[in-house]
Image 1 (cartoon, rainbow, N blue to C red):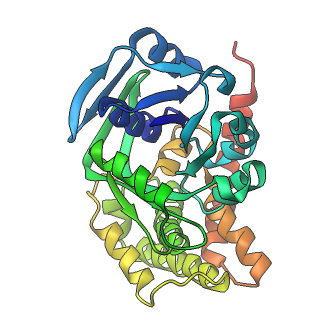
Image 2 (cartoon, rainbow, N blue to C red):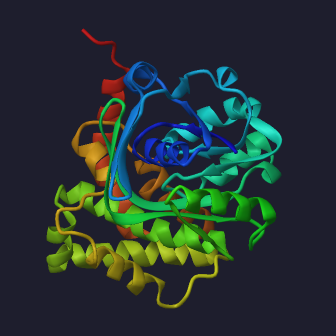
Length: 314
């Protein structure tokens, strides 16, 4: 199977590397220092599932140079999907599909508008990985899970086929009967965790232990669940308490990717996480004061990061 990974960051480099190691034909759509490193020195993967080096890696910054694929894994930041989506059309074979793996809940709709709904499969991932440097990806912890499902619900032969390829690459593939509910359950975890982590600038062990920030976490989770249900998503009654239990199970030093981006002065997924909760809540008439507070408190950092990125060096 030919797979193109659009975005060779922590998630894309890890999944693409494992698939290539298992014998799949993998191309990376990348840019900048990561693209140069992949072309010149290959890719090193350091994971509990194995440490290895791929000396020859196919990588390009132009989709037209990569050729068409059965599956395109979209693993860029959520705020990059809108610009990227139309450029992916030449990459996908007529019977192929794209799988968004972003942290938000709107990437599928963006890709479907650009590519056609039939050419997009629902997806999400649960893992902790990051680039140690150009061409080097580090995966920590035992969890390495990709969940797939058709947006109309249930599975399909194409989903099952790709899930088998993932499992052969030592990636735990789960096929969901309700991918929409799975996406929103993850969103109820990542948006509150990232937002509260960014505003407190504290690791999860500290923010979950303090009564004030724990209460903020729970309020933020409850609001995400309320918005999901207002959209017709079928979430179990114990979703919020289950998400809080997931946060309690994290290693105390853990931080969210959005938190790390904002603390480092980089553009983040704020608009697609807490911002999306506020935007969708307003459209549905669902009050979301905790998420509105996080958005208001973090917007100045986000705007400063984007101004800095846009400023020419020197």
